[in-house]
Image 1: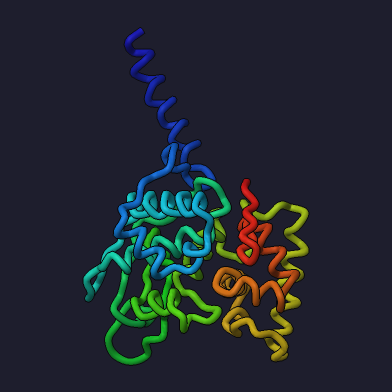
Image 2: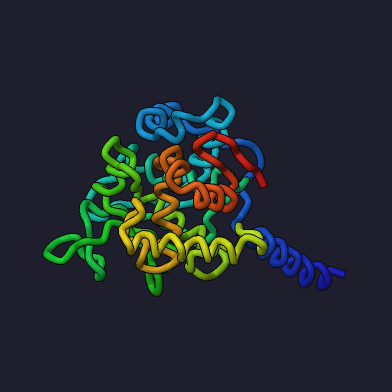
Length: 266
């Protein structure tokens, strides 16, 4: 009988662990508490949070607190500040705020650089034009952000761009195993083909100079999703006015309509 429990209990524990990790790990039950100094920084620097209702703020704070518990944020060539930490966490929570207790199972570390970097992850010298990147290969599970782009994304000068949101949308996209602009875990099958068609139509409009979406979206479908999502979250009213079909589709994907603060919970 003892041998039976020695064999069976670890197997049950392994199965439970695998289920727990599937489709993004669930956060601990109940709301997580965020320290008041960090709450004040959220309100001062993150318009998305500032515009939430009181109950939504509590839930957003809980997501930020949980993120800061399970992801390590470290600086290379720079010291990490509380502003850095709160902006990175906010960039993570904004795109998944309508998705329930989402956890980035494909992320362990966020590395902050003092400036832009190159493809070899160097932030000194010439040819540095990368503002953010989700790591692959030996960098798998890590994200690199440049501090100037992080700060700009949450400033009045951001416009329709936010590098942190951009990179975290890539991770949401990758939750199904492929960074391809088709987040299959979030996009119902019936909407998959219309979304792909809509992306390609808008890419043609960008190419023809008939769209105000950043031309970087032409790189591929994954970059289109990330770039359009920046716009969707940063300037939702403007995005809805100029791109109503895209606004509706992204609202279905992220389960939220930020222009109206109309949350569509799963």
